[in-house]
Amino acid sequence: MSTYQRLCLGEREELSRGLARGQSLRAIAVRLGRHVSTLSREVRRNAPCTGWYRAAVAESRTRYRRRHGVRWRLEREPRLRDFVLAGLRRYCSPEQIAQELKRTYPDDPSMRISHEAIYTYLYVLPRGSLRKELLAYLRQHHKRRRPRSHGVDRRGQIPEMLSIEERPAAVAERSVPGHWEGDLLVGRRNQSAVGTLVERTTRTLILVPLKARDAESVRKAFARELKTLPRQMKLSMTYDRGKEMAEHKLFTRETKMRVYFAHPQSPWERGTNENTNGLLRQFFPKSTEFKQITRRQIKRVQHLMNGRPRRVLDWRTPYEVFNQLLR
Image 1 (cartoon, one colour):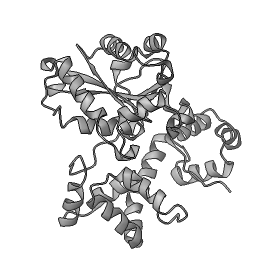
Image 2 (image 1 turned 60 degrees about the horizontal axis):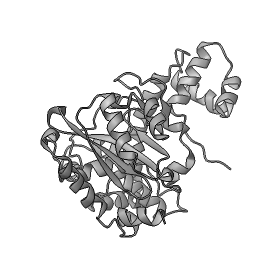
Image 3 (image 1 turned 135 degrees about the vertical axis):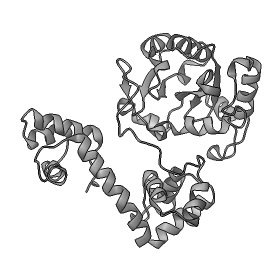
Image 4 (image 1 turned 60 degrees about the vertical axis):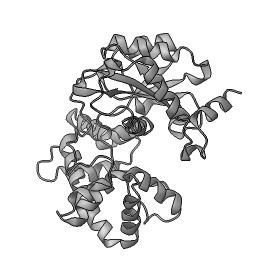
C-alpha cells in the first residue's frame, strides 16, 4: 500500500485551474494521478465556506496547520524531540537530522520529521533560554524565520526553464557522476562574485572567476571552465533562478549540459552547493571584493577544498574520488 502524500503547490494550482474551467474532480484527479477523494477532502478542508478554491489560500492554510501542529508533536513525542535536540547540539543542520533519523530508525515511522518541520518548531518556541540556545546552533543565526515566497519567484521568470521536476531520478540518487549544482558566491554589496560549481557525487568543486555578473559573462565563464572536463562528467547542472543563468539554452548548446532550475526559495534542492558556499566563506567572507582577488588565489582555494578528506566520501578527498571514476 502506497503512503499518502499531501498535495504540493503545483498540484493545488492545477486543481484550482481545473475547477475554474468547470472540470470535474474526477477528471482533475486522473490528470494528476490522484484519488478523487484526496481532491475532495482538499476542497472541503480549504474552501469550506465560500466553496471557491484557491491554491494560494490552501497552501497558506496548510502551512499554518503544519506550523502549529509540529510543535505539539515534538512535545508529545519526547524520544523524537530528544533526538532532534541532541542533533542540534552537535551542530547538525535540520536536514542532516532528518536524514539521520531515516538511517537510524528505518522501520519506525514515529521517528520521522522533515527539516522544514524542525525549523518551524524552533521558530515557534516561546522566547527564552532554550529558544536562544537552539537557534545559536544553526549555521545562520536568524532570530526569526526568513520570509518565504511560497513557491512564487519574485524575480521574474527565465524563459524556457527546465524544472527540477523534469530532472532524471539518477541525479537525485547520486548514482551517476557528471551532474553539477551551480550558484554565485557574492561579495561585498553584491558588486562582485565568483561562480561555484559542485559535482553531486564526488563533491568536486570548480571555482569560476567572473568579470561581471550578467548572463553573457556568466555563461561564457562557466562554459570555459567546464570545457576541459571529460564528456561523461558533463551531464547536467541544477541552478537556482538567478537571472545570471538566463542564457541557459545557449550554455546547453555549448557544453551539451542540460540546466534544471530549482523551485523558488528552495535552497535545499541544491544542498551540496549551498553547503559548499557556506564552507567557502572561511576563505571569502561577505566583505570580499572579488574584483581584487586574482585567478591564482581563487584556484588555490579550489585546490584546498578538493584536497580535503570528506566524511561523506569515507574520508577520501574529492580529487581521489573524481580521478578514480575516470580510470
